[in-house]
Length: 232
Image 1 (tube, rainbow, N blue to C red):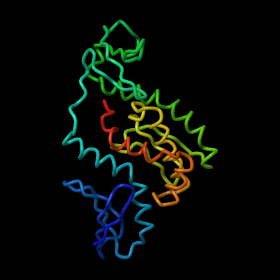
Image 2: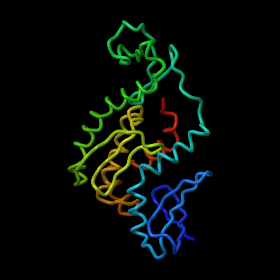
Image 3: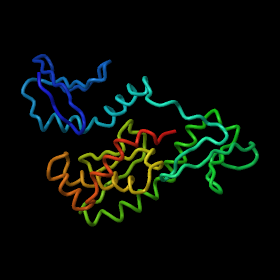
């Protein structure tokens, strides 16, 4: 039995002579296991984990949500909701007061009372819609410096990951990025762009990232310490 390190995960590798294919699983205790045929190359194992990383991190996030570290967001008058690092108070409005279920107006998030049962879904949709121009602007600012342009950019729930890049040149970003200060969104965008050149967190990766964002370590630490508070 051996251990495979991918990103911030330690994965237990279990070889079996009866196995012909690779299979990832998340155990009840949250440990990750990769079942393989004997003699599989580490590079092939890493490629397999990368191809299944979105599934993997989503499963890990589901495990984490079963024991939440913070109380759930309340959708009540005056509750605070982040957007681009700033907290805005929630205002509940009558069903006929606005056409859309949720909008940001005059420094307040205005949510129709009839939309309350699906309040979180409306916020997620709103954040995804308003994150897109932020991502487009930042990507355009950095693709030339890094030397790679993504083939596609997606916004979705990535569990507890902020972003992801795959070998097909596709970038994925969590909708929760819209809640963060712009400089933290910038860090995640640049981080994932660099992954299009340097696939793994090698010394070459961190060196390239530092050339583009000299203060990347401070931003990374901030995300690790404060990022969990930014949710709905």
